[in-house]
Amino acid sequence: MKITVDFLSLPNIVKKVGSKTIVLDFSGTTVNDLVREVAGKYGSDVQKFLLDEGGNLDMHLGVAINRQDWIRQNEMDRPLRDGDRVTILMLVAGG
Image (cartoon, rainbow, N blue to C red; front, side, top):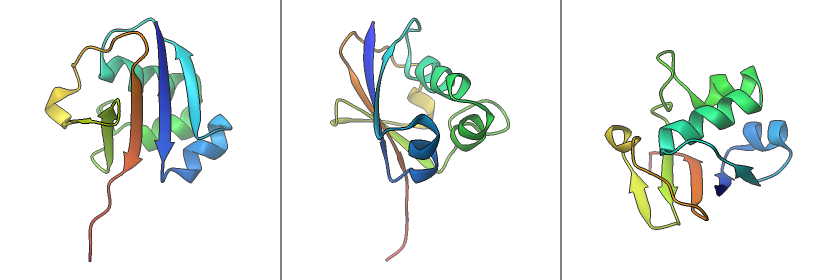
């Protein structure tokens, strides 16, 4: 299936992958599979940025599907469908 991945506020990743948006021929099924595939495909620097030591999405990052549904850390097994747009972004706090 084809999945579009957007990287927002992630200049280190954009530099490594060459674009703010990529389209993947994705063979996995879940959000977690997608994050791990992106991490593996673009090298160790991207992997270190996206994944924590346990191989899960880093807690400083957020994920949204189709710019509507925010995915929590415990929802990373949510299935994706052909044509979905997944946004990965840096979570910031402060005021």
